[in-house]
Amino acid sequence: MTHPEQGPFLRHDWTTDEIVAIHDLPLLDLIAEANRVHRLFHDVSDVQKASLLSIKTGGCPEDCAYCPQSAHYREVRLDKAGMMETEAVLALAARAKALGADRFCMGAAWRNVRDGAGFDAVLAMVRGVRALGLEACVTLGMLTASQAERLKGAGLTAYNHNLDTSPEFYPTIVTTRTYEDRLATLRAVRAAGLQMCCGGIIGMGEAVRDRASMLQILAAFDPHPESVPINALVPVAGTPLGQRKTIDAIDFVRMIAAARIVLPAARVRLSAGRSVLNREAQILCMVAGANSIFYGETLLTTPNVAEYEDDALFAALAPPRAGKSVHS
Image (cartoon, rainbow, N blue to C red; front, side):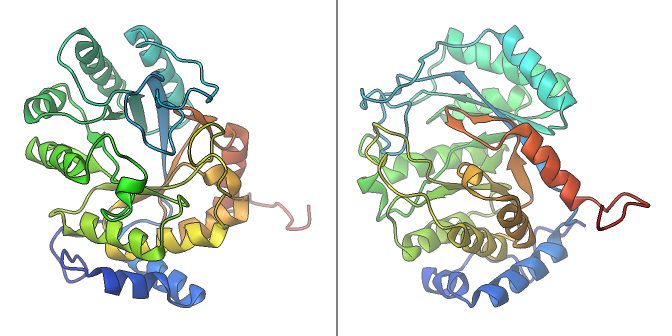
């Protein structure tokens, strides 16, 4: 089901207090409202599979406290790798498509895009992914308006650049760039006519108000981001957040539901951290409005749900096979 961009349920003037109140509704009321909104804007049987590949790994000069790819954290065990060959990337994209992926996402551990051979290679990868009939998304760090235009010209579907958290909490997580740097890249993405893929991470020590503040900023974009990945922290030994406990599954459900209500037309992506959820918790997230997952056993450098487990998840979502006994 489609819905016009302008309508009574699409708002750009949410306040943080309103979103906190939504997030903190009694759980069953929250899920019911999120599911109602989800059904108004989406076909609930449409859950997109996206595949994510690190095309250049490690050595990033940023100091994001959650990220094992940062060059600042020397105790992290990570196999660094330079830019992959275009042919190898496209072979993996073809495999992802054969396994049912609709979108192929590529990430490079850069602070910002630099014109030259590396960026030219990314543009070739984007053209190749699109030629396979897949949506193409990249996350490359900060970029300029002209670079965004070049990506658009190569056929890029969407650019991922997460806000991570609220402006208030952000300086405790990243000090090598500002929140305004993030917003400037998102404005360049929008100006080029690219879809915006932008969300954040929960479980880093932030308050519920920080989570709500991030959603408020996303909702202020007009139009809303087309894609909103909700990640839970995957603690990695050697990073500043490596000793944090994984979040409770209900925290994930609440954040998914709040995002669905505030950003009703977006694809809400159940992203990093999904591996801590059992099948039933993942299905509850989908009831609450998640309609995309990352498919594949690795998300850049952190573990994801095994493909056979996702196959079982989608089998559970499908109608029971005709003639199959419920007790078999």
